[in-house]
Length: 264
Image (cartoon, rainbow, N blue to C red; front, side, top):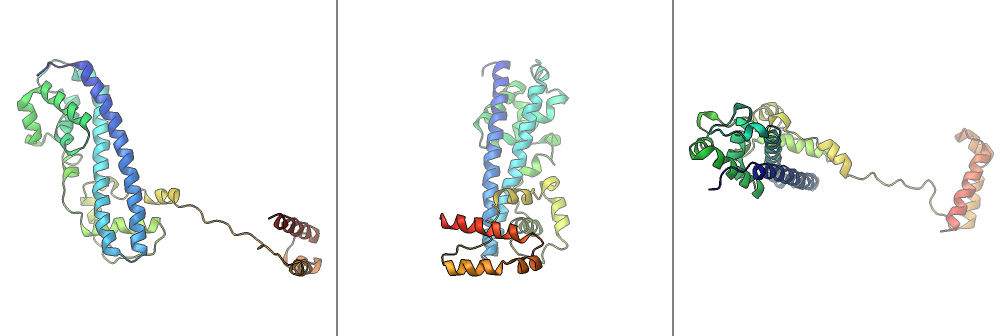
């Protein structure tokens, strides 16, 4: 194998950061679309289908968190590249967590750039160290930050119901469940992403649902007799009783509206 190449390693770190950010943005857009689909399914009464789809959304959210973490580790290695470039067979403690996490978690991603970076790091620190990391001996890989996010276990029912409740609430779909009263807090606490288990779905929904169109104040009137009748109803006596504005203003306003309707 070729010797350690500092320039190549730095380039690969930067490429990995860029690709990780791009992949995160892509997956977040897909998750947003999935949440809208889930709200539609609940609205149509297809609750079980919605629950299955929620499990997929939860898995994607956990994977996005893993990608964010790997991006931070790549940024860390770039910031401390002088330490990484040292001619040692064991990583410095200042970069040990980042190196172990990349070697351990990179195979669980679809990024070729990250796979190449992993091979560079494994070559630098040797086969024995690499095997130790891949087998997670002595818990060298952070369990809470990395290992739990790679767990493929099915989400708990309480967590699924909590997600479903937040999604339907954000998109204004009426729905309630009796399954999340007691188990919700426990499910959130024990989930692999308990720090941010329920994303900011309300803001996401508000940004994606357009405001309803405002109806016109006066409908189009084609008949001249109807127009004359409406003008009589808007006489000074009635306007003063129902509207504090001067009668002349009401008359002018109606005249302008009718003139605009004639132009249609």
